[in-house]
Length: 379
Image (cartoon, rainbow, N blue to C red):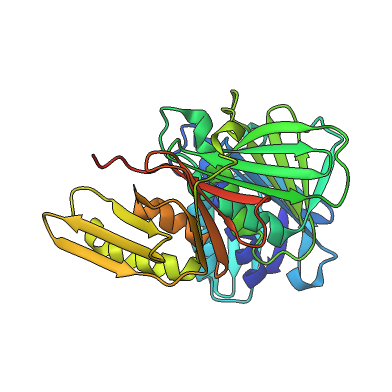
């Protein structure tokens, strides 16, 4: 095996594949990076059993300056190999495996010899037995992930809640996440009709890594779902993730369709006030702040009271306020995450009582995106 490649381009590709490689895996070979050279392609693979990322580099891509002199395969210690490549002195790097599983890495006057492993012992990529391909714009997919992953549970006691519930029906994709204290749901219209409906749960950690990888993507992401695996294709990269087993709880009934008090307010205005109030709540024993709504007095107030630290109170400007008088307490971190997901737009908050979950939706689209938060009992 022997190839040479532009070092800066190689570093970028390694960074993507290394996202899937963990030093904590119990399968020792998965701490390594698999490199396979064919006559005209260099294939990089990294995996941690949950996520597998494969990047295929072609000799026809002039930006890579990839020259393959001899096909072959090897698995090299991923983190160590990556550090070597980043610190090499020249703009090009050559890798050669002569005998056994020792790789010579040459760049300028520097030469490393690194012990590798037999690529035949590396787990095979999962086979996708699905003909259903769904196209989605990268910026839209990233937005869907960012708006829902905030509600993914971090508690392993209910593993199914550590994922994002993805539903494909007709020409719509719905993503839902909840940790029992809050819920996020986003719906998007797909450019083509889905022939085979899908109902799967993708680990939140997988979706977070995917969102980071597609930041600079311009072409549509291709989504393919199989029985226990999901595949995202973009550029020359394949991103596989296992699916979580089990049935996701029915969440549609949790979202109320009526309300007794409604507030429309600029998301940034409310977020900033909550951020200020949380300076106090974070110092106290109970991380709780209160929102007081009085339509008759046209009053919207954020307040907090901590015996340990002090108190805070702030009146807010708003667009509209209708319905019954209400005082409701909540976790400011949950509310802050929800408001950040909307960006700098106007949002509508709908309440029913101090102890029932309330919703936040964009003022100009009350159907396709909703955040739900469970209040905190303070008495």
